[in-house]
Length: 534
Image 1 (cartoon, one colour):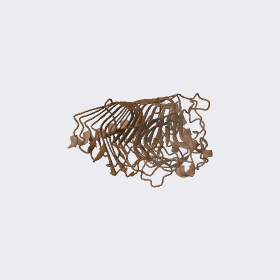
Image 2 (spheres, rainbow, N blue to C red):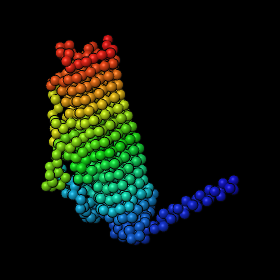
Image 3 (tube, rainbow, N blue to C red):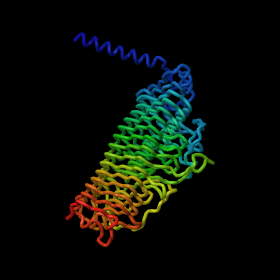
Image 4 (cartoon, one colour):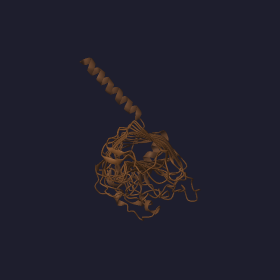
């Protein structure tokens, strides 16, 4: 027993020694005149502490208390450590904030000017601890409905530009006046274990990773009025080499999102082990109570989207579980910038997704004429929709290629499950689509789709539906190993411009009256074999 006690004591002493060594250059804000009474403005005192710490490198310690402040500029080799019980409280007066306009030109130049913590071209900076950064965001009014004026008077909590070796860990971020945090063109960025609650104002994104390289986001919990974990590209810098894992996200808008800005684009993005759940906030300033989209991959201002892998996601509540959009808004990233060409979106895999409580809009994956999505794969997806649409519309959705990309932009889609248009290289395997109330729309509509494989598909289809799957201008499609779970008239119907090379092989079609309407002459288009019929 004595030996065990000695070992434990030695371990504690070693841990204490290590902590002391790690924090041997600690600078308390109290030593520089800060007062944590919630009313004293501490901007000068905190900045003096940061500046002194930067001379040798070290830790700025914020002890328990409420420290009111305006803008603080972070410096290289400085960690801001918020102890448990410490709150950095953003001033409610815009005059207490410094206006920063970074050297890097981006779409944000004209309006993202104020923040509590700002850094530009710094290295080795961190904000850590169990404390809180609170922006008092409800104190700032939206001064205009028009961009960019509506953003100008609302500070962020954190904005870092062209910084390297950045760590944001364990802190709580709440009540921002605009976006909670933005990292623009940063490299080697780690965001770990943070908590975010942003329901104080418009545009309350959880985080915006913008043109950053080598990013790890893990073990975070966020609940926001606007978008959740958001990847952007508002400059020529591409957002690339990003992993996002083990997070819980709630949003009245889009929980996991790329865009809408995409000047540089997105490359090598891995997202896994995510729970998307309903927000705890009943009041909605933007979006919908249950959220607009669970996964929204948008690319409309040029740039590339190449190499996106999303897996192990539970989606509960958002109206549209999956939305992929290549458009052509063509917005330059600064005034006078050249109009970007249409971008590219390819090599996207979404797998192991369970989505429930989706509404009746339907999911969509769409490019635009002559600019298709390429190599899109959905695997092991199970989605339950509300359904309940009793009258099918014959109106084809407009292209809307220059519009803001939102999953609800067309209203109710022609399919209750997936509306897929302008895609080359489509793979859908082990996808299960159901609805709570009977829906007369088909489960799938494929329009201008080439080189597609549908396997292990399981779907519901109404007896009033003209077919479970509608095909228009589809070239080379194989449907195999699939089944229709409810009685319906036809498996497929071809409409509009002519399709070619359709193969239907080895499916359980006992609930289907026929493969296609008997009036359609498909001898030179359709090959079928080994299907189990009634």
